[in-house]
Length: 369
Image (cartoon, rainbow, N blue to C red; front, top):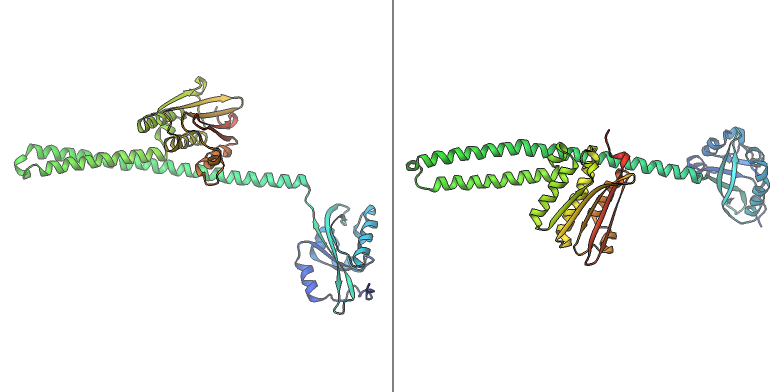
């Protein structure tokens, strides 16, 4: 074992590389003699202890910063490191100038000079976050993320509402006006057949009128898909009924809707109505694309302290693989919509029998007085 060199004077400069490490680290870093005399003291150590470098250098770290019950074990570890061992994850508190204590996890190793002679012991202490504090920080971080996601969802729905209104009101009215103009032109051409040069112009006007009808229907369908006017004007239940009727017309499958009587006259916040409507919309789209069902049933009811939307079909039945696959963006989206309201989304399927999905949100989040 190499015998240690004489301890340098407290004011003697430390090698440049060690000083750079000392001053830039966020962990408390000490350079100690084997007897725990403080030879180096970085800014993080000043922060956690309350002792400046000038006040700490030359003093015993054990006497200055350790509670009595920890002194012997710390000195024992210093002796082990001096003999050539290394210490990792030694949990010993640091007693600050004010008397408060911070639990630190210490890594201690030797610092050797150019000829392999012992200069001192480097002790690096990292503050341990209490488990309860870590849980609280994670909870707050999750709450912030959820709040931001909820605001983004509200903003997206508001933008959908704005675009849908513009499509319905401005584009719809413009196309309706154009259809009236074409009808007027058609009547004029019919009244003056001699000046039309045959039936080409009336036929062309009729064809244009048909194109306007198709475009008007497409604009209305797009506006309804973005944000049904009925959802804002009449509420969730009429919007779900309209959604069920549209589904029947498109697929030929029967779609029944069952709403608890007490919910028919209750007003819901716009955010809740939009979330449950979007979930119902996505579920019916999935049924249309994948289930090959002949019958679908939607139920809206209150169960305990939750408002629940239940959608059941008699189709193929969703597989567990599809439920758990990472690229099931529709399912992930429904789960997120329910979660942002403090609720949950759950879906189960049985092969050859069908699929049932549940979206529930807390009652306290739903009803408006």
